[in-house]
Image 1 (cartoon, rainbow, N blue to C red):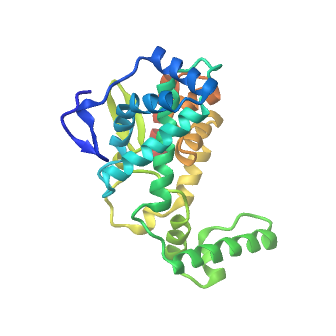
Image 2: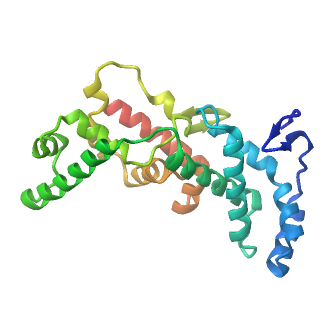
Image 3: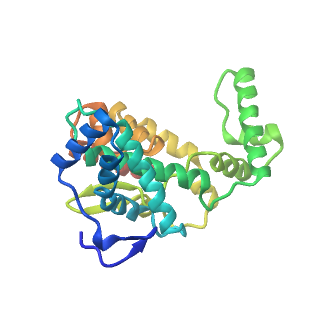
Amino acid sequence: MAYSKVVISGINTSELTVLKESEKIELLKEIQATGSKEARDKLIQGNLRLVLSVIQKFTGRGEDIDDLFQIGVVGLIKAINNFDLTKEVRFSTYCVPMISGELRRYLRDYGQIKVSRSLRDLAYKAIQAKERLILKNQREPDIEEIAREIGAKRADVVIALESISDPISLYEPVYSDSGDTLYIMDQIGDKNDVDSWMDELSIRDAIKELGERERTILYLRFLQGKTQVEVAGEIGISQAQVSRLEKGAINRIKGNL
C-alpha cells in the first residue's frame, strides 16, 4: 500500500518503515530477554503501517483519526507484550485482531453513541422482569410479556435492551469471496415497517433451522466479534469453509424469513 505525505498524531506516514518478519522476531526476542526500550521502540515504529491499515475499516464514523491511530498503537503494544514466541504464528497475524479488538472496545465505551440513563433503567427493569417471568412460568418470556410486566411499549423494550448490547459495526465483513466483500450494512433493508425488523422471534426461529456448526459460526462471528480466521482455528476448518458456511447460513435465514 502506498502512503502519501499524511501526518497522523505528529507522524509523517510516508516515512514509516516496514520490518521483515525475521527482524520482528529478533526484536521480540531481545525485548523478552532484556526488556530493551530501544528494541521496543523500533518494533513499534516498524509496525505503524500495520496500525494504519487496520484503522481504515474503523474510519468514516465521525471519530478523530488521530484518536483511532493512538488506540491502534495501544493494541500494537499489547500484542508486543503478549506475543508468544513458541507459537508458530506470524507477528502481524497476531497483531491484527489485537489492534481491532482495542479499537472496538474504544468505540463501544467512548464512541459517539451515548445511552441515556432512562433507557438503561428501562433495560435493567426488562431484564429483572424477564427473570421473574422465567421463575414464574418456567419458560423464556417473549418481548410482549416483558413489556406488559413492566408497563412499557414493546418497541421501547426492544430498543432499551439493544442499547446495552455490544454494538456490531455496519462495516463488519460478513462474507468475502474473490475480493467481493459483503458487509452487514448490505444485509439491512430500507423498510418502514418497524415491527418487521424488530421481530427477533422470526429470526430466532430461522436460526433454529440451521445446523449446529452454522449456528456456532454465526455466534462466534456476530456475537463474539471474531474474524473468519479466528473462527476457523477454533472449530478446526479452513477460513474458506467458514466463509462458505457463513454465507449459506445467512442465505437460509433470509429465505426462511
